[in-house]
Length: 95
Image (cartoon, rainbow, N blue to C red; front, top):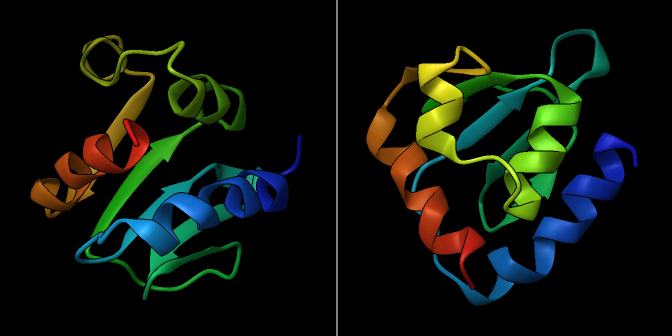
């Protein structure tokens, strides 16, 4: 699964649920997924919050197979910027 596939899979949830702010999943050399302006894209841009995570762990996070709090504690993801934006992701993922 590519990052573009991940972004495409997130678009329906973003279309029906309000997500305030902008959030970037930075997967290093694999690229980025940015949630902003009601959509998801792989075009890099500045964001209110950046989550550094591997592509594999991003897939696990989005599928519910990686608990975000455990991932932070284990160093599998790092949050920079406005953490409140990252907290809004939970509402989006649970829909």
